[in-house]
Each structure stands twice: as C-alpha cells, then as structure tokens.
Length: 93
Image (cartoon, rainbow, N blue to C red; front, side):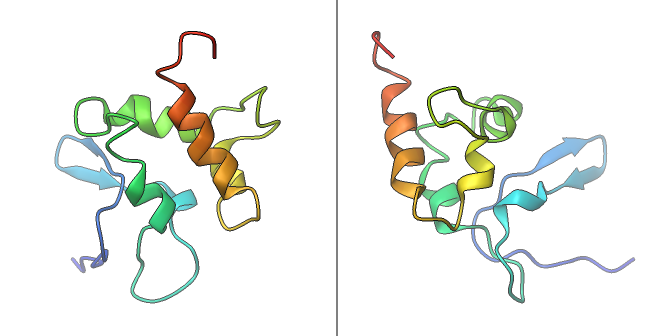
C-alpha cells in the first residue's frame, strides 16, 4: 500500500482506518499541499473540534457568497471567504 504524503495541515475525514482528503483543498502541484486559505481558516471554522462541520461549510453553497466557498479558492474572491468566516461569530450575519 502506497501512502500519499500531504504537505501542510490538510482537512481529513476518517472512517475507521481509512482517511479521505477532500479534493477542493488542493491546488495543483506535487506533493499535494493544502491551500493556504484552507489552512488559515482551520481554527476559525473549529476544524479540530468538528471536522465534518468545517468541511461541510466549505462544500455548502452560501447565499451571501453566491457559491460554495470551496469553489472560490484560487480566485480573486478569496478575501470574501475569509470575511464570511469572520462573520460566523457575528449575531447579525
């Protein structure tokens, strides 16, 4: 069995002894390295406590963003992703 080395902290879902790394977080390149924005937003999205919730946030369409946050990675709209995460703690969001 060959293991793929993932550079940097990556989002991962574990099922028993298996691990799945959502593809959206990896821009092209070898070795695979998690997108810098994904790495930076791990803590604000509480990934360590709720990995499924954090991954779900990336993959769920946002009416405010008009897209899934994952679809905006690598675009000029990355600052909007970070702003959206900041607003999660804002009661008026």
